Amino acid sequence: MTETNSGLVQIRTPTYKRPVALQRALQSMIDQTWANWVCDVYDDDAAQAGKAACESFNDPRIRYHHNAPQRFASKNIDHCFTAENPNDADYFCVVEDDNLILPDFLAENMRICREDGVNVVLRNQYVEHKSGTTAAHLSVGGVLDDLFVEGLYQPDEFRLSLLMGIGVSNGGLFWSRNTACQLEIGFGCTATLQEYMRSFSIVEPIYVAMTPLAVWAENAEQTTRNAELKASYLRRELDLKRSVQELQRLAWQTAPKGLRDGFMTNPKWAAQAPTRASGLAKALIMDGASSAIAFKDALRLRARGLAIRLFGRTTPDFHAFVQSRLPAVQR
Image (cartoon, rainbow, N blue to C red; front, top):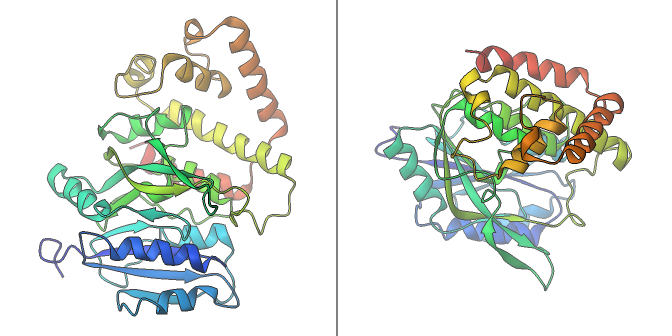
């Protein structure tokens, strides 16, 4: 199966006890202008609530899989970024059950891959506020508007986005079978930390496409991402921020000097100078950004960063992840 003749896209969809939302996500795939796709749905519900939703479409492109044993949210999502390719697909993306893609999502991302010669695209997304309620509505702009501008980013440059935001969002990633990026994390951590780790895992040029063609659901009350976690919210937040801080510092340390020197003025970032400087301060990076924020603000942010460094914890799995990615990052 050749890319030129087929362009088969494998969509991976993790789901758990949200059959109505899943139906909406699947309908958004059926509405795609590019019809050559398959969707593998991975249901983590012991009662298989997603099975009827999949079967209701009677579409052979939708394949239902029941996870046994249960993977829980973080592993179920991470599995969707595997390098395994049982369908011999040319391209891949992940649509979580409560999200959706707009009709040109597949076609436009494929076009960018082919015309710009890239293997990874990060696509802007609308936010659906109050998702799952009668008050649900879309944001005016996209989640990447205050971080990126349209265009190609080299991997060292892209990883610096960790100092200003999350970088990669699962639902915005679209990649080719030829990518050198290891997008499946493969180590134990929260689903949220995985997105930061995926940003750190970008080791080849990535095109950031700013027209929003996907929808990310804002539904903190309904999300099942942390259902398996036993630690308190405060403990989870401290540990998350500690790990993110480590990734930020590594992204900075491994970036070429020219990128570090030009970080505050690089026109490829949409983030304003105070946002850039605040990121450096919170990461305890002292490289000449103080003039962009007031001294007292810099002091407060650095104190916050120091508290995170002192009281947050990283895990052996996190350190194993870093060691697994550093050789590619440092090339």
